[in-house]
Length: 53
Image 1: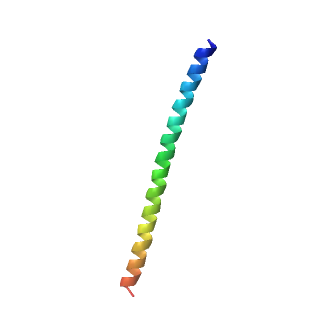
Image 2: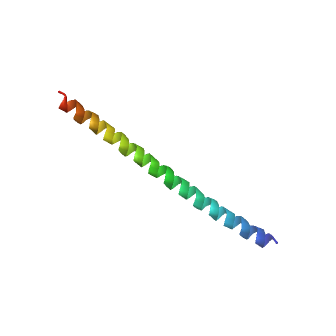
Image 3: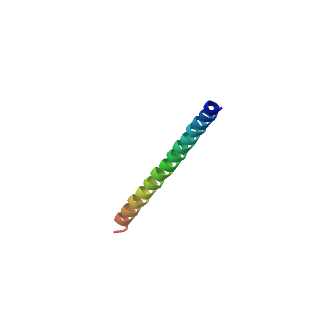
């Protein structure tokens, strides 16, 4: 019985780790997208200011 519970706990732990990794990957991707978008906006602002000068 203890062995079965231990097995169940280990499986649950592995599933949680996979879920955490997936969430971390999704958040990391979103952060990268935001940073790239921010950089593009900054570059556009610089180019726009150069055109109007």
